[in-house]
Length: 84
Image 1: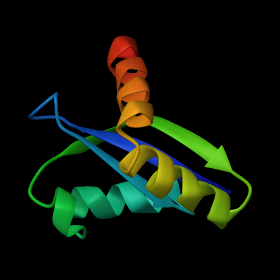
Image 2: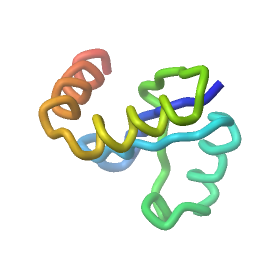
Image 3: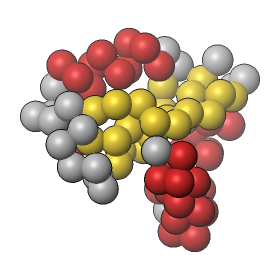
């Protein structure tokens, strides 16, 4: 499985990070350990994820839709914030 996920900063509740991984647990541990430059120095919690059978499908969702299409990102973030 391959995952597209959304992390929320525990210190700043309005700050989110969108990423992609084939091992969600290990990737979350890496974020917590400061192994990612974009998330270093802060604590994060997993608030949303989507599972895909193939890496290209997950990458397409992460890059083309969530990171580069503001309307899709806004819709997803509204759903995430409403569920928190």
